[in-house]
Length: 289
Image (tube, rainbow, N blue to C red; front, top):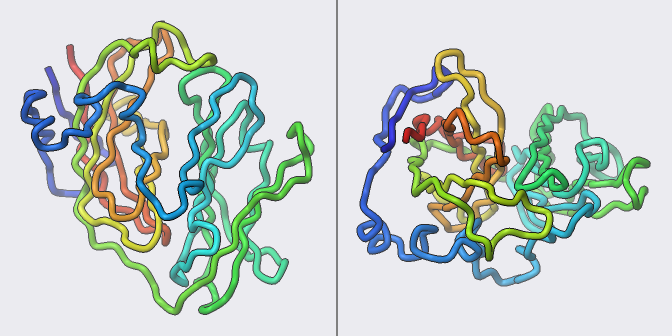
């Protein structure tokens, strides 16, 4: 049974019901949803893109050094002047292993950073999310470089594998309603989908988030928060999901460390675009046995 609670941090005055549908109805509506396919095919769907290397499969081998999951804007793409780049990394490490910067003509652009790291699906696999927040709009029709440099702590220090992008003359705005987020299930992980370094005998929540506005020119992210206390708003970022261009929904799993199944979890989701615009928060959804 599902129950829904509103977090005091929810940014929208509007309430959106979490749709409860039987599996047959959901599969009729979205046959590629997680519930309708094997787990290893359903997590963070890989889009058909002009450049298949844009979305390489994640390397989940044990003790792999921190590396880039994605840089947004993508390399050699065009982005608005109010761009606020996003860098996503993965591996056995934390934010001290990679130094991220925004540069123009080799010089650092004044900005702030917000960095969050979280354990993904095993103790040797962490994700880090870097949000770069320039103090002012970027110069129009100008090349910028998002530098992602390995630090001295990294096993291969001094390697810069960032991405160049060019600004347009446009500013991007968002006038979106809150995304709709719903549970598809809470269950054991399928053995065929568990990688070598993943937690064994782990439970997972399967979640579907649908956004109000699709992005046609740049990738965006769904920021998924675990709400620890709905009365105080205590929460933490638990997942940054890459949302490909033109895609309005994404289904994903949140794996729970064995032994930490209780208390049952609550989540909310926010859609963030390349300019740092964020939608109102989805309703906080809580799983109840």
